[in-house]
Image (tube, one colour):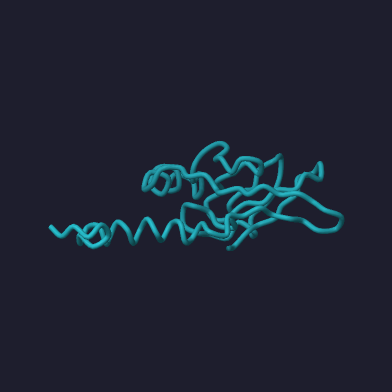
Length: 122
């Protein structure tokens, strides 16, 4: 997992996926201010707390960003993860089975389309 740990000016610690959902740009190259992290490529701001888009989706470059790039796909939030600090350590709660759960649904769908998941052949 590629995670980003960030802190706001009040010292609150947050963990987000280190990838902008628009084109996969690493968010660790962005800036943190006023409770948001800003994607360095398209300047979309995401809430550190919720991962939700704050303001415009894909506002940069001017004209091209909002009128073309921002219309190619709908606004998407960044995944967030619960964190806590324990002494000098920061702990992030992640679902270590997330990939297996995703892939099980994916493969079941493919196998079912072939009639093999349930044993029923079409």
